[in-house]
Length: 217
Image (cartoon, rainbow, N blue to C red; front, side):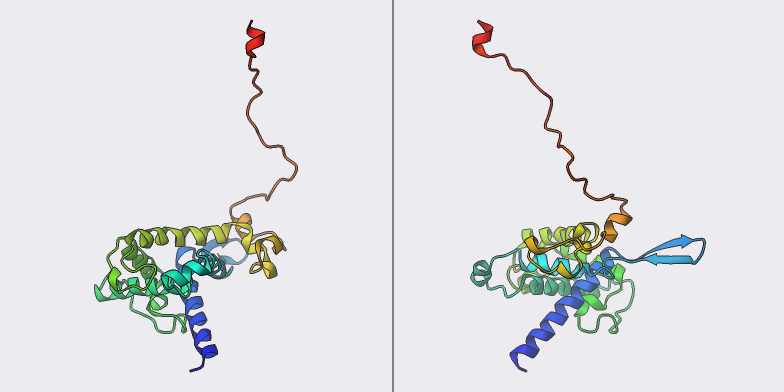
């Protein structure tokens, strides 16, 4: 297998894993309408929030630090961490539904779980009910980082879904100074956020008058 094919498989594995993650955290939500009956509002997977999570993870550690701690990709290490949680869930018979190998075909064991079981696997990781010695850097025997990451994964999914990132469109993968809001972000519509209000003055506190020492005399 050449290097290019190997990188392609790794990227597909990472993508499938985080697609499964964001789908479990923010799934499509049903809504009853008069005209069409029950319809589903898109979730984090449909808005490709997994791209945001992968982007942030891979830029969370500088390249020199990655070399020092022997980390190829933070997104790859985290995807493997999720698979360890899924493996523990299945080995301890805590999964609610059977594994479905047709889900996200390029992903690992975590992506084959049902959405509810993916969240249960994430809980096992957060509780450190996995063998941390079997993990790769930077998670190996690093319980503090593991618990922080379980919170970060939830937060990043929320940030990507409800922030302006979904409105960046074709510029979403560009450097921050090159991104442009190409359309009104769907997350803003769902949260009823009206958008930024330009030229509003910030509240800078109350006007206070301090008597100078000379005036006191």
